[in-house]
Image (cartoon, rainbow, N blue to C red; front, side, top):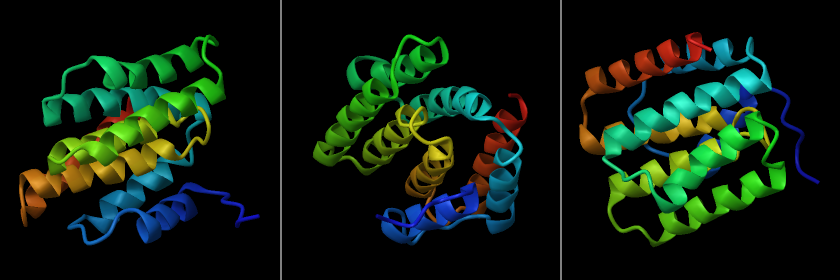
Length: 163
């Protein structure tokens, strides 16, 4: 059995070690986001995940149909008590499968972010990894633009502060 993850800092560090590499980021804002997430309930992080998903879809210019729509259905349905964790994970898996087949890098990272959002009912820290993928997406859209990354992280903090 793997290491038990007990906080958002460990969860994001593990994701960055295995999934996300070589990204321009604002470490202080990232740490502020993770620290703020530690003050939120699982339900509040799911609400944040939906807000972040809206932002990712808009930024990437995705259509809110098919697997993308299922992302929203997974989290909103779980919040309403109508979707099980297993069903949400299945929806997340469909997004990840679509991301594996995607050749356009921005769309791929957006789908990865949405897959993390859909997995939020499973583990409360998945929105933090979705936020990481959103930063990767910004890196692709605006290479070497640390101000764009700063705006992204500030928006993520604003969204998390709203829940």
